[in-house]
Amino acid sequence: MADQNIAGGRELDAFLQTLAPKLEQNIMRSALRAGGKVFEAEVKANIPVVDGDLLASVRISTKAKKGRVTVSLKIGGKKAPHAHLVEFGTKPHHIAPKGSGSLLIGGKVVAAVDHPGAKPHPVVRPAFDSKSSESIAAVAAQVRKRLNKEGLNSPAPEPE
Image 1 (cartoon, rainbow, N blue to C red):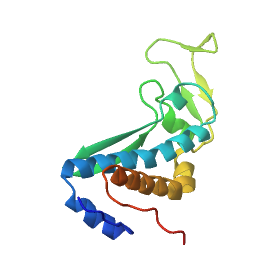
Image 2: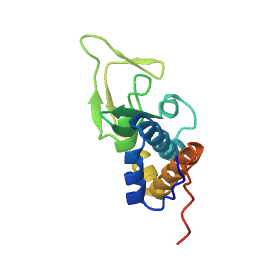
Image 3: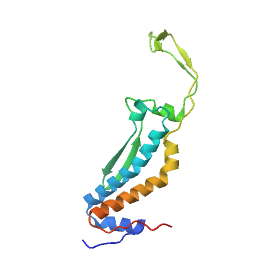
Image 4: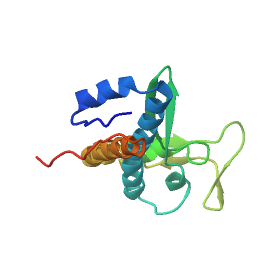
């Protein structure tokens, strides 16, 4: 394949359309994962507890379906179902056991408890707000890296 110089987004899109679909998909999957890693690191840095299930639950995944590649940042899951409670906080609420059971809180058995609520501690939105430009740069750098690996000339953009 002959050398091609690629400068902007429109040129990149047009060029990617000329590549084999599988190669284009692999390049985009790799690039979006690189951009997602920027957000993943920032979300982990924003989590208030430095260890535990919530921190371990932060992950990114990519998916390709019908020629469209997407990246997702996920937080929470079976081991950390409280992720949304940390992100958005809770209002004061009453906690009572189901049926005729009781609650075990702090090693003590209690019939019910009035929870004072929790202040929100956003971790995802601040990461998006502060790292969007860096993430886009990581995507572009990874696309250039992969194109160069395929033997295509894709120089870094000139500083503005």
